[in-house]
Amino acid sequence: MTTGWLYGEYHNGHFAPGVLELAAHTQKWAGVTLNMAILGATEDHSTLQRQLQGTGIAHATLIPIPDNATVAQQAAVLAAHIREVNPAFALFSATPLGRSVAPYVQGLLHTGLSADCTDLEFRDGQLVQTKPAYGDNVACTIMTTTSPAMASIRPGVFPTATTPAPTPTTVTVTPFPVPLSQLTGETTATAPTSPHQPKDAARIIALGRGAATSEGIRLAKQLAHQLNAAVMTTRPVSLLPGFGVQAQIGLTGQTVHPRLLITLGVSGSSQFLAGVKNTGTIVAVNTDPHAPIFDYADYRYVGDAVTFMQAACKAW
Image (cartoon, rainbow, N blue to C red; front, side, top):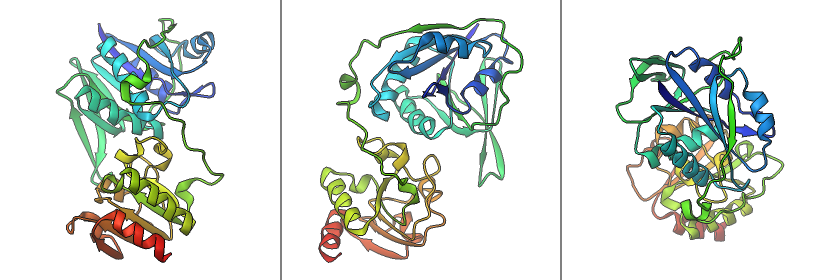
């Protein structure tokens, strides 16, 4: 019997899109038992048990964590649970949170991840993943040689279960014994959100790793206040406290189309550029004169982002 693992993303009494569809899809795989991990603070395990009946989940573990745990801390808890279960594969629904947390878990487990898959099979003891490439013009078949094989799957590609699974689901509540502060730093509250989503702002300041120092973040927020702009980030910076997936620009985050985009320390990966295709004017700041972002920018500044922001805050 092969053991699989599924992240049971759960919000406000409901599973996230794609989670139960994934569970139903794995019922077709002979000899596979699926385990689920659910992160939550006060979820009623009896309610969860009712919701999971007939889904194909053999065992679900509810791990209570604070509501204000960062994405990095959630990923550390999930990675620890995966190590405990020791599955052949680990699956995530490619929701905004799933797309954010899965790469971080991958890094902690030192394994491979196929993101945004459109099909999955389990053949000869291996997870076979299908995902689009080259602008969705080519379908690639991938088999991961490391363990566990990890994949995130687009919600909506699989149907939900139409017949009850024969095995009932057992739900247990497992208090995680390690304080979150010992996993990935202190737990911090999420920054309050404005009534408008950052991705809908007319002006956006995008922070990359080249500018994500404490001083760089402070100046970016000051400049954003002066310009009435939103501060957003690349994927690595979105893992820092106070940002999160709602602030992440790119293929696995948010698509934006502001009239003005100022990128600070952003190299311009294809993942990031996929999220800014319909931007009006791009002002790019980077110390590397050969950074790919300069090929797409209307205005270019080769130099330090902090120096640029200090001058901009005085001028604007």
